[in-house]
Length: 64
Image (cartoon, rainbow, N blue to C red; front, side, top):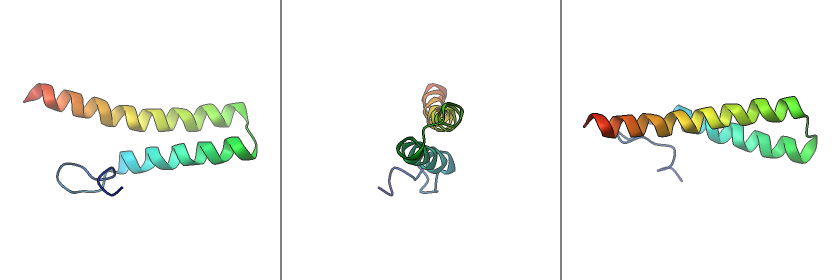
């Protein structure tokens, strides 16, 4: 599990950690009380965090 949260240089990736926390919060919120606005906000934050990390890796590969 630690490998998922670390970058290539063995540093903790805050984007991945925030994305995971947002996803976990979204799942808990959906079980407790699903409010449309909150679901969209937390889901958007999780998608942005994971999407930014993925895009960063794609562009880094193209530079090499």
